[in-house]
Length: 311
Image (cartoon, rainbow, N blue to C red):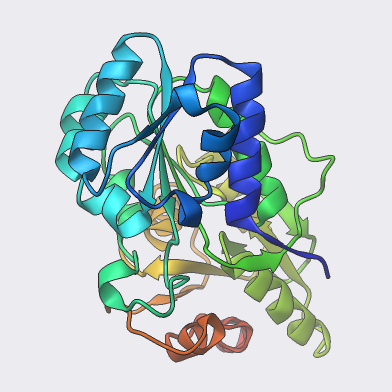
């Protein structure tokens, strides 16, 4: 299985988008080497603005640039991009529906060494609740590149959360990606696993474990949390005996909540369970996998949830 860095893919895609559209500008909160916006700085220094550790000011400046016809991409760690600048994102960017793209890098637990202050487990919920905001969670480097390409043409504010680490690639290079799409990674007959981000790879591992016991699991990548394609999601869910939702985020407010809401509103009554962080902050660890194990974000946990539902 090929693995690639989502951060590196993001930076490269940003450079490509900048070559195709001269109105794209990039703002950074002193983390360019981590977010990989530094690649854009190297290619187009005249369109790159280092704002320092001042996310609020960066968001407000981006709003002004958007009003002047530019397409700003702003960057920080996800916890700061979503939380520290929340008021400016809401008031200056989302209420007028401006074309600002917010990159929350090192999302979830992927900044494993810096602990709870640097780990965003509530960013999807914060961004999802803001009207006009689109929320994207790529599963791998290929989807990240396709997302950035789509974001460059999209109208309105967009939040994308990027994992800090290398992840397995499941998205086909031939995928005709669109914001709002729901993509089947593996077809199945018995149970469906809705996932995004790193949990797509964990869902694929769980599907292999289930297959050994004769249980056929479909894995669906719901990388656009908002706007959620509820119609497609509901039609998929109706075909299965049970469903599990898996995300690297607080169990409240993110993909788990979005899927549960869609199924409830559309009267889809199937056994449903979640694999997510159980309303806790992050912590430090020696590596990423150790943290995923600690919080139950594993293939084994997905497997166990499926087995219990089918029982």
